[in-house]
Image (cartoon, rainbow, N blue to C red):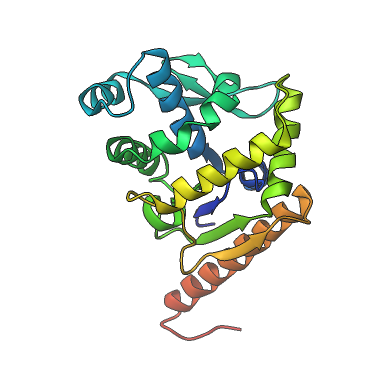
Length: 242
């Protein structure tokens, strides 16, 4: 069966990553959390005291840092590695969330990450979630989903995630962070957050994760069926075989 690219874009804390991971596991596809890559760059710049407006140092850092994903055999999850070290917990902290949109708007950072993401998915058979997968990274993705949800719902979900990791943050602070990131992501010059014209909209405000996963899998099944039917028609000289 032909392998495809599944692009899941949308706002923060809509369930993109959780849904994408589950879809990838169900299909036996690779999963790439592109947002984690930008968080890793943010962490690297902070730890090396590189100012966000120091473009020469940022470009040098992009050449020196190494971002990859390693599968955790116990949890079955892909975890982000920065220079060979797993940094999954650090990149999810609020201090990174508060700055990642600013870093991801830097053209040099955007270009470097998009190029790496395209290399990761060049053989297809991949599920990617982010902000610009269906518009910039893989505009030819066979399945595109754009996720959204009410901001308070998103904040409450994010608060629960942080609490599990031992970080207590008020909902109001998270709402402010999300609104700021939404604005920066949607108005940046490089690859702004926007729904691709051929992406299906998925509002997850009142949906459970299982429902979100089923929604995407249904789109995938329909797409694969259509592709198989098209290939069958081509093999039979354009005649539809019933």
